[in-house]
Amino acid sequence: MVAATGVIVAAIFYILNLRETTNNRIATFANNRLQTTLTEDWILRSTEIMNMQWSDFDDFKKKYDSSVNPQIYAKRLSLWASYDSIGRMYRQGTINLDYIGSASGLVMVLAWLKFKPIIVGYRGWEYPNDAFSDFEYIANAYSKRLSDSDPDFMKKVNTFFTTPPVNQ
Image 1 (cartoon, one colour):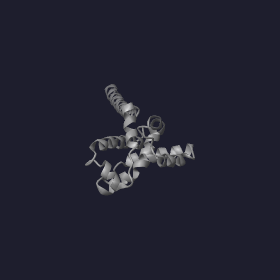
Image 2 (tube, helix red, strand yellow; image 1 turned 180 degrees about the horizontal axis):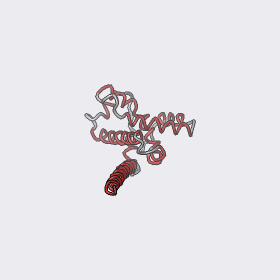
Image 3 (cartoon, rainbow, N blue to C red; image 1 turned 90 degrees about the horizontal axis):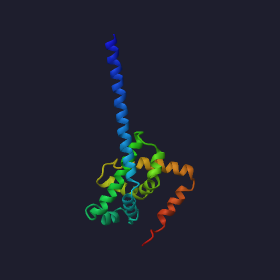
Image 4 (cartoon, rainbow, N blue to C red; image 1 turned 120 degrees about the vertical axis):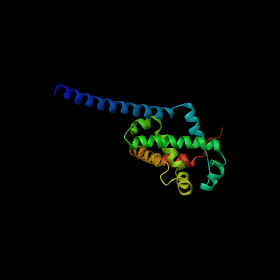
């Protein structure tokens, strides 16, 4: 009886320890992923990507598609994939909106709004129909949070997209 109880206690301890280890790994990964968005290199890359300009999907492809501009493609894909990864972690409950917001929430929303027509265009052209859907999910969730706390948020965003970038 004592031996059986010992085996049961050991099994329970093993399961709890495994769960804690898994949670710690996920938290570490989430923290590392979000910390990436706070580096100077990330901010410079994001700024370069956000200053891209085009008139429509065809114009975008002529200027920025991977076949004509691999450097900007790599930077753009890095941004999109990072936000998609953050969205997946949010959707799975690994991280919450407060943490996302402190690291990259506003820029992520602006990036989604700017590139939504392009991502949708690529979905119809060469990407799967759900490409970057976690990016879309988290951007919409955080945008709602921003709009709830600031009813003028979307008006400000529209101003952001209609004001030309400052040339240096």
